Length: 229
Image 1 (cartoon, helix red, strand yellow):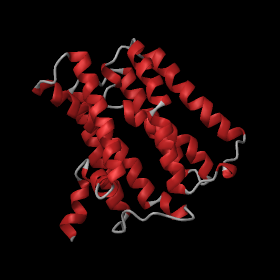
Image 2: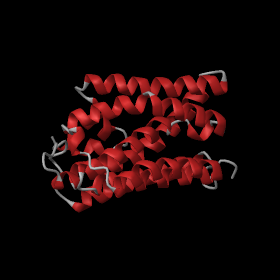
Image 3: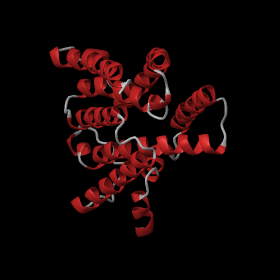
């Protein structure tokens, strides 16, 4: 029991334990995400050699290591403020556990960043800073319709995270539009269903509009600005 609890300190295992296992719809969604990324790697490098697969793995582990922090904070802290919480991780019982979980993932992210020589890559750093900010908003907003806006941004970032750094901005914008028109609506329907969120409950106030329009616009402006640095 204790061994199983502490295995989640290993990056990727928390995601697999709490989101992936025994969830058929999520399994197919995950195949779509990974499969699409691998097709893009094949398109860019004209190969899926061992070296290319290792590069993909590094990029994916860098993403999931930080994304799992958002998952863990949601499951251990933010869940306490939800009306109908989904207790995915009931074994959490200390701040030290949380801090150690975060420390391991930041350490892995820094190692990968240095290994790939991305420490001076502004786009890489800005992308993940933006991801953490959006996930923080998503975790600590109490009103569900604000989370509706941040969820869509997170779904978009999640999809492009493994390959955004290897694409020319033209292809990134092209694929980004395709993702926004297909994958995001699909994920949004699932989110509405899981949260039992009726359309009438979505209050399109100033903050909701600000989040819905400003976040995507800001992201693409950052891409344009930092892609050449």
